Structure formats: structure tokens, C-alpha cells
Amino acid sequence: SGALVIAVDGPVAAGKGTLARSLAKAFGLRYLDTGSLYRAVGARVLAAGGDPADPEAALAAAGGLTEADQRRPELRDEAVGIAASQVAAQPAVRAALLDYQRGFGRTPPGAVLDGRDIGTVIFPDAPVKLFVTASVEARARRRHAELQGRGADVDLAAVLADLEARDARDSGRQAAPLTAAADARLLDTTDLSIEAALETAIRMVVDAT
Ligand code: C5P
Image 1 (cartoon, rainbow, N blue to C red):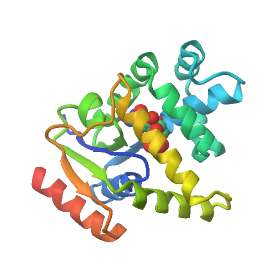
Image 2 (tube, rainbow, N blue to C red):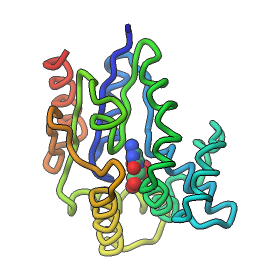
Image 3 (cartoon, protein in one colour):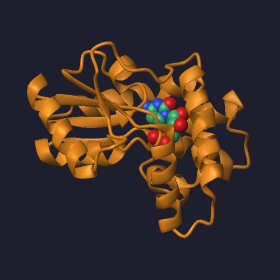
Image 4 (spheres, rainbow, N blue to C red):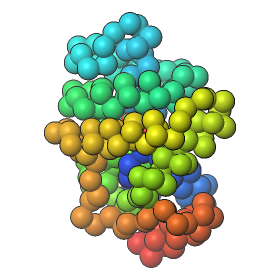
């Protein structure tokens, strides 16, 4: 169809966003951070004073999602991340966001999509699937440094505890749990620099296409 889709999945703070964005640039593709869709839904529910775990509130927010919602300044806040994983556990919310993601990927020249279920649910036939991981300690250190860089005063132990809770929720849920597709290539970034991880990812894409 003239659209190449590269699926990049993995747990929070494994480095998949940075990798996916760089891959898109390297291969001349568009880029979609699908986590920002769930974050936008969570942020909308919170802004309206609703409960992200309430299916009616979550679905209402997912229905009216706008571009402006995807650019809200609070999207990266921890509270929004938690709300995102709560709305993401609801099948109706996931269904409401499905067509947008598929349409984005199918538009030429294609796209790199990063998320949790791109290779398993959104694009099970993607010719290239990467599953990006890192140890939970490495991910906590990176996330902590990122938060500190933005001026947030949080301790490493709290970040680690939040990551473990989010991993458990993302992996343990019924609806599209976080799991590597059987045909995904595993990329462990624990001991890799950003440059080395990108080099490895580019090689994996070239090998697969
Ligand atoms: O990747 P990010 O941390 O921005 O995603 C926020 C939350 O959205 C995740 O914890 C996960 O629960 C959910 N998510 C998802 N499926 C995706 C992308 C994100 O369930 N494709």
C-alpha cells in the first residue's frame, strides 16, 4: 500500500520513544507516540474532575479527543501517566482509539508507532516489530533523571515503585496486555547508549525489510 509500518513496543521508560522518533527520521516515516493518546484521555478526565477508572467518564473523553488534547502541557506528569494506564485498561477506550492509530500508520509513506500493543493488536502484520526493554532499575534511573531535568523533586525509590506498579498494571490487564509479539525482535537497552541502541534498531529494520 506504499506505507511501511514499524511497531515499537515495550514498558515505560525503556527508551522506545527516543528510538521510535529517531527511526522515523532515519527512514523518512511519520511518528506517533500512542501513549500520548491514552495520556490525553486521562488528562481530559482529570481536568473535568472525573475518575479515570470510571468507564463512562473515560469513554466520553476518548470520543472527543482533539489535536490540542494531545499537546496539553501536563501530559508528561506522573498523575496523568497513572490516569493513562487506568483508562488504557478499558476495552472501550482502546477500541475508540484503534481507527485513528491504523489510519495514521496506513497513510503513505507509513509510520513508526510506539506503544504497548502496536505489534500485537494495532498492526499484527507490521513487517518490522521491535520490543524494547531495559531492567527496571535502569528505567527508573532514566525516568528519575528526566523528571529532575524538568525540575520535579522526586526520589528514585518513589519512581521505581511507580514504574513497578505501572508495569504490573500494563502487563496484568485483560485488554491488550503488554507483551512482545511472537515475531518481535528484542532490543534490551540496559547497557546501551542512545546511539548504540539506535544503531542496533536501524540494523534490525534493515534486516527485516
Ligand atoms: O508510553 P506512555 O507512558 O506515555 O503511556 C502511558 C500509558 O498508556 C501506559 O502506562 C499504558 O498503560 C498506556 N498505553 C497503552 N497502549 C499503548 C500506549 C500506552 O495501554 N499503545
